[in-house]
Amino acid sequence: MMNNKGFTTTNLHSDRRSKPEHGVLHKAIHPSVAFEYEDARHLAEVFQGKRAGYSYGRQTNPTVTALQDRITAMEQGVASIAFATGMAAIASTMLALLRQGDHLVSSAFLFGNTNSFFSSLMRLGINVSYVNAADVAEVEAAVTETTRLVFVETIANPVTQVADLRAIGDFCKSRGLLYCVDNTMTTPHLFNPKSVGAGLVVNSLTKYIGGHGNALGGAVTDTGKYDWTRFDNILDTYRSGDSTLWGITQIRKKGLRDMGASLGPEAAHHLAVGSETLPMRVKQACINAQELAGFCDRHDKVDHTFYPGLPGHPQHERARQLFRYFGAIFSINLAPGVDCFDILNRMQTVIASSNLGDTRTLAIPVAHTIYHEMGANRRQSMGITDSMIRFSVGIEDTEDLLEDFEQALA
Ligand SMILES: *Cc1c(COP(=O)(O)O)cnc(C)c1O
Image (cartoon, rainbow, N blue to C red; front, side):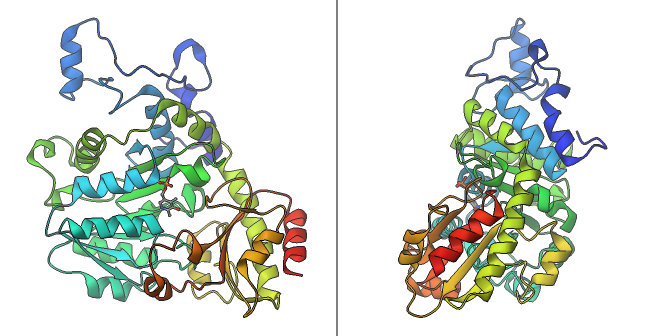
């Protein structure tokens, strides 16, 4: 799968290398749900996993497979499965791998809907401990006899804590725990969780990888780093052949096939085309974020700026060591008496909107929107104040963004 070419070259040429029909450069959009075989025995062999091929669109589709191959190459993994959304990837993976009585350790600083989904897991009898994942000691202290996996994000939303990614990876390895990293915020261009020992990597393709806010999607990638023979919950049916593939097979069958949150071929095409410019977009967005966060940090209407690229950020050094750039998300707490809605309404180029990882710069008053349902107590424990604004910085010209911030905060 991986060759010795760079990230962009590999990505741009990945569809060509699978020898597509008519020599097309982009994998075609294949809407067909069903597939025909000249010899009916071949259909049976595809079903039994003895022959490569397609059986039914809920499980596999050529357009989606081409996108999965790109994600696998980006994460330098062994296999990926795409889902309809990032949440579908997380939920299907967890439900495929965990059972009642299991325990998982999660970062307390989590994407809001992942947090909400984990509370659904708790109602099903799967216990979740939330810890400050910026400190590996908290992860270690939370692990019990029944712990099956550790789940963290790279740069957390919206306060930008950076998990102790390498130390947690070392710890998981020593204990045989599955380490699952949500890489959405950093993207495989800034960081490969495989490099710190993650066994599974989740990416919301909706965000930076697709990058244009025009399609939803998610993926889970097996990096090949985890020894699945140590995972008790692999069903007997999937405990045969190469053990590297046991986990991803169970996720494909029990997660994708049975729960059915499949990615559509049209969305897969949009996401694949968007992914071709990932490095250029992310670089420009990170450069812009650094400028804007620095500007806010010096501004007297801003109480605090949260951005790993600022030297005063508690995990600034860690972020420098782990990531190519410092990411394109930053948040601010406004000074007392400054209203977050007034500032947002004055912004002209920056758009009040809930997505992130778009080409456009988007801003959201987090306590009143994406973290509203969570309640004041949990918000407080996550460091989210009522005046906090989160910015997802886009790829606009830096000067134009700075000008917009200047006039809105004047
Ligand atoms: C957006 C996001 C998700 C969920 O992705 P969707 O495609 O919106 O379902 C998961 N994790 C993180 C960190 C995200 O930002």
